[in-house]
Length: 622
Image 1 (spheres, rainbow, N blue to C red):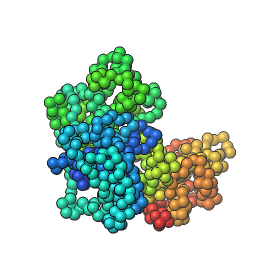
Image 2 (image 1 turned 90 degrees about the vertical axis):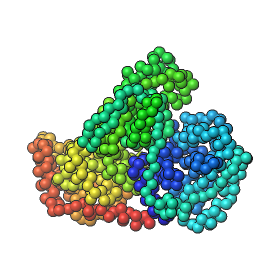
Image 3 (image 1 turned 135 degrees about the horizontal axis):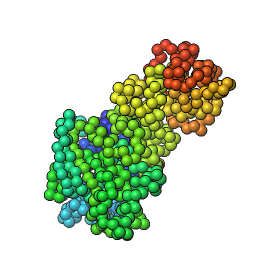
């Protein structure tokens, strides 16, 4: 298959699933989905992601993904190392990375313990899969070590060029598992053509069923989109934590926020209280484990499918809509190195929690449930749109430009906590500063001119009202990632320039609008001025990466643009600094007058003028 086609399919797999991992991390899961017909959620569970413990990425010991194939009389274990690169050197590195896997696999097949707290979820799930094999199957298990890659060289050339590293990997396998049958090979684009032959067509794989203990009632709730099934009662916290161990943060993909790492949550807030209660129950043994359900509001789960079982229910493709803080806090408690030896596992298994499991095909209803069950911590209206298709697509486009788009509350803090090095590797243009969903919305509204200024000053309206949201985040407004990044940079810096660099203060005693009060009016005038005068190079220069408030060069250039280059400063001083009050209608009239004075009152569309800047950037970098 053509490499560009492969990248398109991996991108679609990632966007459709709403996965936070980058395309290179979704590449092996996409392969498992297409080649071995795993459901997307199963494929992601059997793929590596950053270690939750934080400081270092990995602890996967060379295993990017795995699959146990039991379709033949002799089962096979496929171990993947994936390189999302066309570079032949990357293929060689893939085989070298796999050299870390044989010793770990030997320990697993021998039933030896591991430090699960430091293991990537891919190894946790691999161990579980191997433990499900019979003794006879384990003894006869065939191992396949594959490097998945995008190198477009002839397969024979790739095999010849990687012969020595393949042989070295083979020696490492023999050293740890001398009696084991194994295969070492590479899988390139020519073996990834799933659009032809037996693998062609639409691939739909039902997700596996996960058992959950649930003692309670079964309701059918009427809804305009069709009946909603709701099962609610008392469940087991340990089973929910086990779901997190298997899937990690993908389990929270439909939530509006990540685990809140702020001290207000972990030291004084809900997470701290949960940890305190768990310690009292499982370590100090001063409380009954069943009482946890009385102290908790409950966990809400959405599942694609639900069916009854002897012990409760089985769920298909579950997502936690509310309860992220509880499950993550419980997981961290269970894996605390200081507490773990003291935790009474029998008490841990008895912990109960109120549990609701809903199933519906109405995604809007799922989103509404998420919003309305996440109000124990203050939530901004922007969360209403966090999982909107527009926001997911924007996130992917920003990521392609190596910029971090924070559509979910706490997303960047989550990356700092789990994989800080990815900010350098995958988001090198973000400079530890995200593009923020609310800032972007306000800047987009301001760039629309007079029509959008009210929304810029009242961003809640943008996210709460469909009509306004669709206008602000219209496709035409989102044509250029460079321009959107420029808007965020201007948003961050313009307030500083207005307050400290431009002499706007009035000489009489009347109170002038504060810089924050005219920030969006000034931004609207600036982008329209730049559009009118074709200042594409200026926007391109300061819109290709994130710039902080300490970026002196940008600050000085912005000051010049606002002052004698455009005379916006004079227009602001004449029309805003002479106001008798700072009411919205007065500010609106001042903006109209300033726009007219600067000759910007004609139809000017900055989004159209700067719509091709991404292409210009790509040409410059080529």
